[in-house]
Amino acid sequence: MKADATAIAGLHTIADRFDHVLLDQWGTLHEGMAVFPAALECVARLREAGKRILILSNSGKRAGSNRRRLAALGLPPEAYDGVLSSGEVTWRGLHAREQAPFAELGRACFLISRDADRSIVDGTDLVVVSNIREADFILLGGLDDDAAEPEHWRVQLTAAAARHLPMLCANPDLVMFGVAGLIPAPGALAAFYQSLGGTVLFVGKPYPPMFAAARDQLGHPPPERILVIGDSIDHDIAGGRSAGMLTLLIGSGAHRATLAQASDLPRAIKTAAGAAARMPHWTMDHLTW
Image 1 (cartoon, one colour):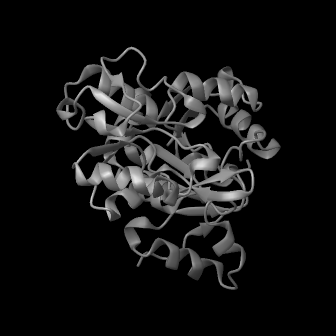
Image 2: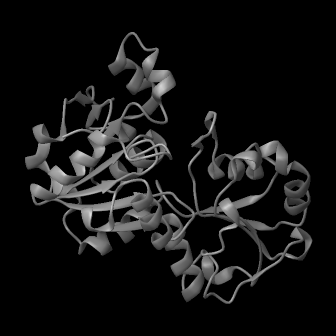
C-alpha cells in the first residue's frame, strides 16, 4: 500500500500543489449548526491565494438549497465559486432524460427527502406518488433524523424489492450528523434496499459522474491540480483518487470515532482506507489554513 498519508498543520503548507478545491460540506465545513470559524477563515485565505473553490456535496437537495443553507450557517455565496450537489446532478439528469440511468426510469416516483423537500423533482416531468405500489422507481434524496434507521422502511422496501422497483439514490453518504450525533444517511438506506434484493443507482461521490461534473463546472483543469477535501474515505478520498485528483482527509468528521481512539494514527488511516487507491495524500484534524 501507498506510504502513510502526510499529516499537515494547515493548507498553506501545500498551497503550491493545487489551483482548485473541491470542498465537502458536512463534517468539513460544518456539522449542521454553523460553519466552523477556522474553516471560514480557511475559505477566505484560499480565495486570497487565488484558489477556486467549488463546494462538492452529497446533498440530495439542489445547489440553490445548499447555497441558502450555507449562507444561513455563516458562509455567503460570494465567499466561494459555486456549489455542485448530487441532488443538482440528479435533477439535471432527470430533467434532460438523455443519459443512463435517468432515461430508463419511469415517470411515477416515490420520493424520500429531508424536510419534505421537492426541489429535486421541480420542473421535471415526474409525478410524485404517495403509495410506493404506484411508483415506477424510488427517488431517495434525503432522510429526516426520525426516519433515518433503515428498519423504519423495511415493510415498504421489502414490497418494493419484490416488485423490482429501482432506487435512484441522490446521496450515497453512509452516515450523517443528526441532533444526537452520527446517524444513518441515505446511502445506508440504499445499502439496506440492496440487502433486500433491490437495485440501486447512485449519483454523487465517489462515483465518476460527480467528479466529471465538477471538472466541467471548473472549466476542465488538469485533475492533478485539483484538491479534494473531505471527511469520508469512502466518498471524498476514494472518489478524488479515482478521478486522478489530490486528496486531503479531515479526521474529525465521519471517521472521528475510529481515529480518535487510535494509538497509531497512520496505521488507523491505512486500515480505514483498505487499499492504496483509497489512501489520502494528506490529513489534518480540522480544516484550517
